[in-house]
Every structure is written in C-alpha cells, then in structure tokens.
Length: 450
Image (cartoon, rainbow, N blue to C red; front, top):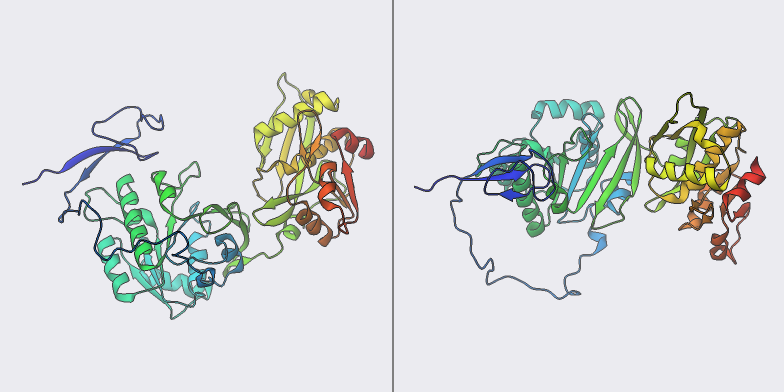
C-alpha cells in the first residue's frame, strides 16, 4: 500500500521543500511554508509526454485570427482585454471583497453571443438568479452550476460544451486528488494549472475570480499570476461610485490599459469619458490644483493633481502622497528646494491624485511641481492650463511619449494652454497644433506663473 507523500510549500512564492524551513530560501519570507499532503495519482503519467497524433507547427503556421475574439458586449471590458476574449485564454480577475468582480463578470456573461457556464462555489443557484434579476441581466445563454469539486466541474463542462467558463471563485474549488483544503497553495495552483490545460486544448475561455490579501495582492501562490494569460485588477473604494479595471498582465493586449465604471443600483455602467468625470468636481480658483494628462495604456486621461503645503511645527516635515509614488514626490521636492529655491523643507506637503487613480508614469512630474509651488505661494494656477512633462534632477523638463494623444485630449475638453517639454516640439513639426507652450526647465514655468 502506497504512503501519502508530504512536502512543504511556501504560501508566498510556491517554493517546495521536502522538510519544513523557518525562512523560505526563494523569497526570504518567514513562517510561510505549509505542509502539503499529496495522494498518489491513480494513473501513471507517460514519461515521454507525447502521442502519435501530436501536431508541431512552424512559427508562422499556427496563426489565430484576431477576428475570432469573443466580445463581452461591454466596451470598457473589451478595451482592457485587448479587443475581447481570446479563445483558449485564461483570465484572472482580482479585487477587494464587494468591489464588483462578480457583478462585472455576470453582466459580461449575459452579453456574450455564446454558451457560458457560470460555476459558483460561494452562492447557490437561487442566490445567483436573485442577483441576476436585481441587475436585470437574465439570459438563456448562461448556464448555472453551484459546485466546488473540480472533477464534477469538468464533467459539467463536457456536458454543456460552453465557449466561456466562469469560476467564482478559484479559492473555493478543490481537486479531490489532493487532501488539502480549498484555497490552500496546492489546491489553487493545481486547479488553475488543470484549467489552463483544458483551455489550451479545447479553445474554451476560462475566467476565474480571485480573492485578494490584506495587502491587495491576489491570494494564493505568485505562480498563479504566471500561469494565466491575463491578470485584471478591479480597483476602487467601496464608498465611492467609480471603479477602475486595470490590466496588470495581458499576453493578447496592452498592459496598464484601464476601463472605468460607475457602480449603481442596477450594476456597473461604463464611463466612456473618464477625463470629464475626474475633472467634474474641481475648483478652478483653488491654490494647489493643477491639471495634467496621463497615458493609461492607449488612452490619454486628464487628471487633477492636488497639493497642500503647510508650515511644519516639528523638526521633520510630513510627506503624504495618495495615488503618486512617495519616493518620487521626495525627489521632486528636493529638486524644487535646490533648483527653484523654494523652501519646501519647512513645510508639510500633502499630495493627492483626484479620482482614485494611481499614476506611475513620470509625465505628471511637472504638474506635481506646479501644484506644490502654487500651494506654497498660495496663488491659483490658470484653470485652462494643462502641464505635461518629466522633471529631471537638474530641474529640466524632459520629453514624454505620445504627446499628440495628450494634446488632443486636452483640446477636446476645451483647455487653451498646454505646457509641454521643449523637446517634444520636434515631433509636432508640420502638424497643426495650437495653444502649446514649450518649456525647458521648471524655472521657465514658475517665472511665467508666479
């Protein structure tokens, strides 16, 4: 009689060890190795892993047409996916509890012009129908199945033969070949790996919903994100109406593409013009408020950068940033102190990107510097001006990519002054562009404004 095998797996990175270790040799985390008991497989694997009918293609011989993509009927969702669902792909949707992951996927499933199997491990069929009725998305093409046993899920897939399979959520599904409880490292990894094999061999699109940890990362081993083709993160505050769907990984489209939604009583609604939404509540005569143009994937979005500088009563001034990298803010404040002779060292500085977006590109550096200076001088900046540019350590304003898209978005919303790097003027030669003001360094901007 064969014995049950035991190994230890790191919950952070998936590292496997035959013995327990206090510190993971791979990721360096402490006390993350969990004991895993694996039952022997009933059937032996073919050591060669090949069959007589296996097909091997050349690089240009196995081409999948982009026209085969399955549209979800939600343009913002399709945009983030790169144009729709790619047959044979596996998509992971993560986000905080209650943010709207299941609502988004359910709304999309009812608009797909194909058979969909919705597998729920957290709700009964009756509960799902009640939610669908509330959202007004009842549809004949969606088949419901409440189950957590992966072998039975495979049988249901074989019976229904859908084009799209939705697993809500992956942490509730378990493989009966393993003794581990659902949601553990081994179960999440093995179920996802088998689901990936199913998608690649049959062409079925698999959409799996994943929980997130308290740190905002998708729960389970990090290898889960490496297995899937697309990782989508659903972001937003539950007490605010707007939600942002961001592509963190996409083998079939642009990464960092975003889709914007508004949560209402009847579900999620698309926001087709996010720039107008983000600027809707801004005060044009408030010091420290500046408009910039950021590039999110293929879309240019206008944002409001808010800064507040107050005298410090203690030795070390506070530096607080929301939606912008704290370390980048510290660098820009040092540049303002050294190159522009602004006494930011005696002030607390608070920075906020209005609307809940998190910006990582350096093209909004100039707007951050102008917002801080505006608050220091207590003088409002022209409400019709947009500031675009990366700021170097010497105070120079450096060029940014795709300046034409940013200018077009600013002009579409009626802004009459666009401050941009002087180096970007070369790419605008021969093009009809109005209301642009080229600048070489931050002092050029400050001298004109303050």
